[in-house]
Length: 138
Image (cartoon, rainbow, N blue to C red):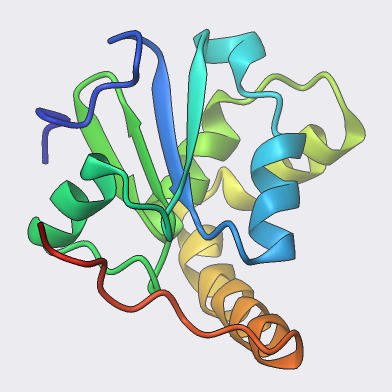
């Protein structure tokens, strides 16, 4: 699927849509240091009223089923998103090297991602937070 309508504020670089209430998601997107490899990166909380979140939901992307990574006219969701991110991040930190070692392989990313989602759901529940659900329509 293309990124039409999903541009960053500056029209270039990458867009990552993640759950801002999930401490794992927050830390993951901050630790990637993606900008070292792809240039400007815009992080968008999937719980926000951002038009791009509504666009993604209208296109059928379920934000409770996975984060979204939009880059170079492609949209990646869930395990495909973490796989693409792992392939693109610089090896500048131990975290990035470990992330690339595990998630840069599509099959492993698909096997690990359900466990990551489960950890997110359990953490949200323990913190008294709800799942994202559908954003409000305008």
